[in-house]
Length: 244
Image (tube, rainbow, N blue to C red; front, side, top):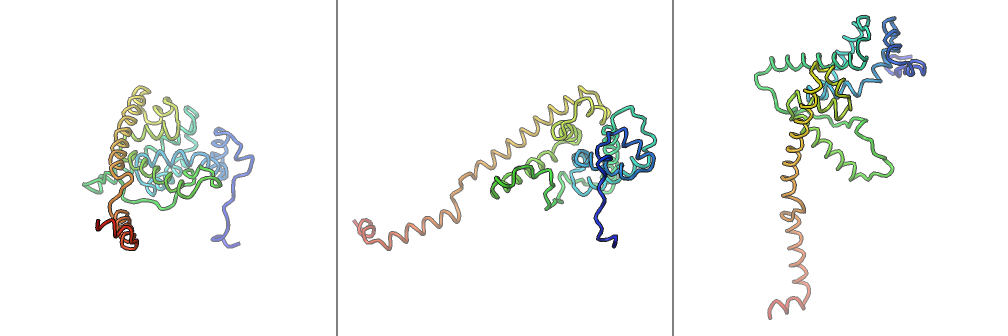
């Protein structure tokens, strides 16, 4: 079979059903299918954590790959002092922060927000029932999501990382604290500030958008005026009323 056209093998049912300690033990023994199962299990969570730090889809994917390679190389060092997910998250955070420091050294000016966007929608965003959701509703939901992502990106690094871990990934306060190496109290404080900043930012967005709600100027105004004048010129009764 041509390797370029072959489809990747999926982990077996037994591998997919294995718990984290079992997977780690099998990975340490050289079982790559177990490693694939572990990656598929944590891909979404770890990607979002990396994305929260880097604000760029492509960079987050690169960091996630580097983190997995690092984890695979050091899998024998895992002693079970924390959950596997926490251990992997720490590796991703370290890799993302390293990438961020390199980017800052590379350029004197660091963009406040990423100018690169992805046209492809991530699968986890399409959670609505495709059979009942109208195309216009999907477009609106996607636009709302993009606005929210943009405003999250604008949060300070420490705040947006905690926000994504707690609100998006629904990680516990304790696990978030362990992953970031901060106290639970600091996690709560940063989440509170992140929520407040996000509310303020979204409120400003809403205020700006409200100015143009049901806008009437431009083409709509011209179209209605032209239609009325056309009717007046074509209906004799209206012409007579205009003269009187």
